[in-house]
Image (cartoon, rainbow, N blue to C red; front, side, top):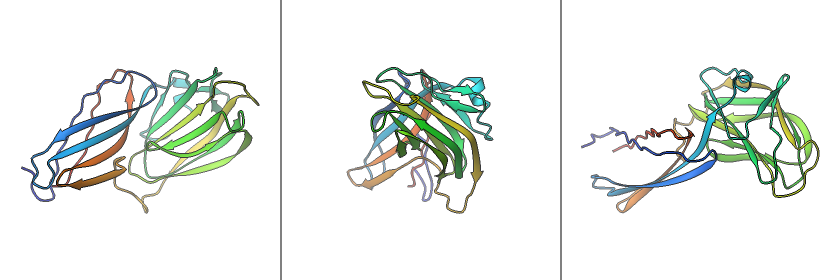
Length: 217
């Protein structure tokens, strides 16, 4: 029995089968009078460790750097997407980012409105760009522990420009003034018939997942 203001921990074992965004749904029974069941929607990104040369370019304390099958590469003082074929993609994930902001110089040279550079924060699409352009970008990190994913995704035909995305001068600054409580939960609706909880995790390929989430009584 969970006491008032208490919590419980839930562990889920799940084997990731591919290096990409994925989704798994879990139904659970509960012994709470107010809530008889929970439906958990878990979004994840299957990854592998990024190369040492790329990881060394992202010198942020307590962070982890991961990549998809088509890994980003180091090029001088920047990191960039590899050569991709039609319908291919390349993802770079940075985990363990404290609340604050992430700034970097961005250069995009892709097919306009077809091949997109996407930025995800905690599993949600934050912004996207295509065509040819460059500039400095700063993105806010609202939680105690944030995950940012950079993705370059091509369509089924044609190319334009250098067909590449380049990032340099990546820096992280902390700010806890507008902090949202930790965890990537995005929705919770509870009632007598059950509830819904969504969150996002970064998982290594083939790794058994340990997902922890607190539920107030």
